[in-house]
Length: 98
Image (tube, rainbow, N blue to C red; front, side):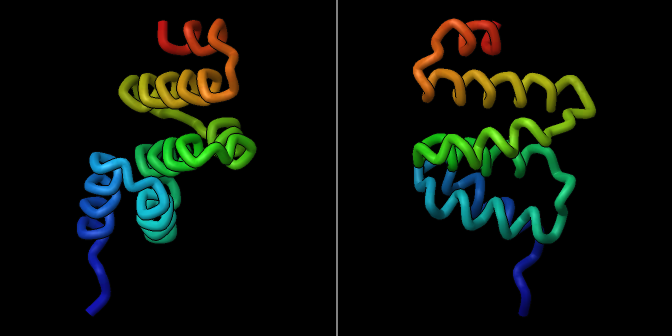
């Protein structure tokens, strides 16, 4: 029996909460295969990539993002702030977190 979309999402969230970034990457990618437009999964994937210092891949996800609602926009800015912080650009990170 194939995994449900909800099962994949729950596994991604659990990996995020545990700091299991390799698993978070795998589960986020699996979720995006089922629902490629789901913005929170895209940001979880970006977060995993940032934590693993794969900045170029995370940047591509952030650049291609199109947050459609206020909650998604806040999530995008938070993830972009994490990106800049990881790159050592604390001023840009502060701007995104503000």
